[in-house]
Every structure is written in structure tokens, then in C-alpha cells.
Length: 366
Length: 167
Image (cartoon, rainbow over all chains, first blue to last red):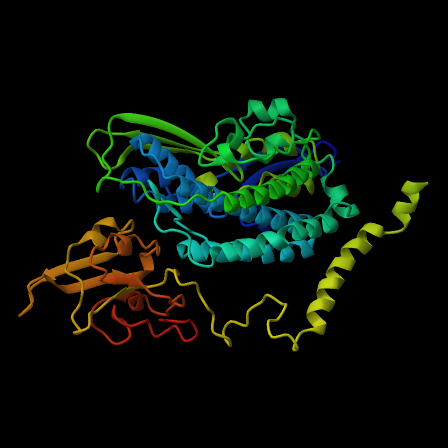
């Protein structure tokens, strides 16, 4: 009687496992998804237009509020795009501090991904342990720039202030205990039979599909493509750092989990190198009082925790505001692979697919 | 054979339980004996929450040693504010060369605590204090000015019972 009938349901926008206000229209045949379309725009604030009406200096606070889990990485992209537009050279010490804070931010973002992704699939304990370590990183954010989440950490041309006293002690303390913490998460998850059943072979996205859709970040690297902007087009102080790009070839949710765990280890390595090789010197370049642009356009891409975040800025002659501002948000582009991952799978697995993409709706809707 | 054994005997679950059990026993048996407790949850309303020295709290106007307001109405903070929450009215005062702010209005509900105003101030006349408990029941309580008990720009807001307001 019901054999050929398909059912349409909505997942979200107020569903805890959609990580914000994402609505997914699903058409189901029994428990199998036959059609999946994400609907976005519930958190749209018009960040690009707002930034066009504000000065280059003021625009930074809006980048904090796009991807609020990785505000420092967004700040870095914004600051470097502006420096490219105005032709400013940043002092070397500022580059090192930027690199270090960016890697701390990657850890924080990956920890929140691990926590929420595991919680969605049913592992409650990891959630609490991951947030415990994230707290230390947020404390370091607070010590450096005064705020925990919306950091506004960098300035165009460098940093506002040098590292606070006692910061190195905090970093050393964190690095001493962090490898053991990653091992703890892996002991809890890697061999857990429920975790493995929920992730292995789920939400596959082959390398061809990922490249065709412009997917970047750990999702692409888990498909076997070693593309990382930190290595491909080095920015900040990444050219002087020694690290590896972890890749897997399975291209499923479990592979993405392993890639992100390996990335956390590499991040800790980069932080250690930054601390060891921290040069002395000023942290702010000499800037004119008011930044006035020429007719010029730049696109600057950096590797945010979620993928390639690119800032496109067009300057107008004699104007203090950008003429056009556009963000290539990693979450927005990665989300379009959701139908490919979910269609043909079970409805229970779409939660894993959303979690493994590591989306933040503040960035997707902007 | 190995696979069947692994399926029958839940080693993986035992491994996970060992970790949680280790943490539980570590915290449970040292709960009241250690000077620095192992548990990381802070007992916030009862114990005062400490913030870092650079913490960005509420905007505060400063006075100098003679009790004069340091602000000279250069309007730098008003111009740089990304959300336009500061409104300053210029005025004159007897026996003072520099301009004097007659009104200094601060709409806290729109403030994003970015500290750009403090950074732009060339006279060190404003700071962000260390107050983070800024909730209020009425909308009027978020409009701060130079006058009014508990709502002026010179003292910390009265709602913060627990936070370290000033150091």
C-alpha cells in the first residue's frame, strides 16, 4: 500500500544536531534518503554589505562573528588580505605570534568539532573532555586579547600588543599535557565498536567529487588530496615551520576523524616550533593614520580549521571603505557536498554527515 | 577466531570505561584534600570569578587626580566604534582650557566590547573595566550616561555582585 510513497520531512532548523539553524529538506523512502537539499539563510546578517559601509579597520569585528568557533583564523585572513591590499610588511615577531594563535585556534575548533560530532553520534564522555582542553585555549585567548570567543586578535599591520607576561608558561603547561589528552580521546573513540559502526563507510565523498565541488579542508584531505594552503601558498610564518599534512584515502567519516586528530598533533608541533623560534622585535608595522585604498583588488586565502577561507577586497581610490568585500567561506562551499554524502544513505547517517563537515552556520549564512 | 573473541569480549568498552573511571577516582578521592582541586569546574557565583588583566568588560570614563574628567571630546572613540554606541556632546566648563563632555552616552546593548575606542583614545581617558555581569531587567538600564545612580559611566554597574569589577 505504501510501497511507492515517499515522505518529505524537515531536519531542522531548530534541531540540535544541525549545529545551528540549518534546515535540510529530506525525501525518504522508508529509512533511505532519496533526495536531500540544505536550506540556508536563517542567520543572514549581511556581513559583506555591512563591511562595505565601514572602514577597513572596523571590518575586522565582523569576521569574528562569521565563524565564531575559529575567530582568530578569520581575523588572520582579514588582516592579511588588507595588508596585501595596502602593501604592508608585518614584523617577524608578529608573524610568529599570529601563527601560534592561529594554531591554537585550530585546536579549539577541532576540539569543538570532536565534542559535538561525538555527541551527535552518541559518545557523551568525549564532549566533556574536549571542552576541558578547549577551556585552556580560550583562557589563553583571554590573556592575549581580552576576549574568549570574539577575539579581534590582530590588527592590520601586526598586533595591538605583545604577548602578556606569563603567556609562555601557559603555553608550555598546555603543550605538556595535550598529547596525552589526544591519546585519551583516541582511546575512547578509535576502537569503540559503536563509533566505528556509525562512522566507517558513512558519508563517503570521493576525491573527484570533492574537487569538483570545491570542497577544502580536512574533508578533502581525508579523500587523499594533500592540499593545504599552509604548504601550498605559505602565509604568516608557515614557510619556516616543519609539519606534515595528514591524509587518508578512505574518504569516509572515520577517515575525516583520523585526519583531524592527526592535524591536532601537527598543530601542537607548530606551536612548539613557534615558541622555540620566537624572534624579538616590534609587533606592529608603521601605518598611516587613516588607511586609504587605491584602485586595487586582492584575493587572499588562508587555511582556516574548516578549509580555505578567502577574502576578496576591492579598493576605491581615496576611500577608507572597501568598494566590494566578499568572503569565500569554507563551510558554505563544503555544505554543498551534503546531498552527495547523504543521498542513498540512511536517515540516521545524515547526522554524522552534517557533523563531519564541521559547519558553523554563522559563516555559511554570513 | 581473533575477531570473534574481540566481538565477544568488549575490550574497547573496557578501555573507555577505564579512562572515565581513572578520572572519576582521581577527582573523587582527592576532592577536599588538595589545595588546588583537580576538578576544573569553578563554583562561580559562590567563588569570585577571576579574569585576565586584559579582559574587555564595560566601558568606563576615567577621572584624573583632581577629579576632573579626562575626556577632551576629540570624538575619536565615536568615529571608530563599529556599532556607533558612543554619543558625545561638546561643551565648555569654567576654568578648563580643553573641551568638556556635557554628555557622554553609551548604549551598552549594542556594544560588542572590541576595545577599539580605548585603542583610539589618545588621552587614556576611557578603559574597559573587568566587569562581565552586565545583565539587567529593563532596557533603560543599558543606556549609560554621565548622571544617574548606578548607571553612570564612572562606576561599575550595580548588577555585578560576583565579578571582580575593578582592580
